[in-house]
Image (tube, one colour):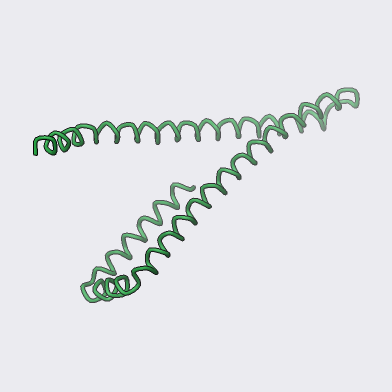
Amino acid sequence: MKKLVIFVLLLGLLAPVSLAKEKQLKDGKAAVVSAEKAQFKARREQIKTLLKKYKKAPESEKPALKAELFQLVGEQVDTQLVYMKEHIAAERANLDNWERKIEHDEQNLAQVKAQRVEDLLSGEAKKKQKAAKKAWKRQMKKVK
């Protein structure tokens, strides 16, 4: 019994620490994303500037400007490819999550149907639908 009480107390003490670490990870990820956006914008501006210089430059300077432009565009394409691969991986994880949910629901189909009927009769279905709609809107705002 004492061990159980000690375990519960330790769990209560460690929970805020783990939540703080999670928040730090999220904040760190947000900082990385904003830094990547800033780098992307800076590169885009450099590319625009180089394009203007290239159009106005004499023929002797164009190969050097073209090489510099090639390097910047290469960096831009590389970062876009990395971003797309990460996005695909995240989408695959999301699809895996949906597949697990479907498999779970299929295994408990009678219970799922009964729960939905109860939700409709009690009015809980409308509350769940509103909550899901709010969550979806929040998620879309984060994506923007």
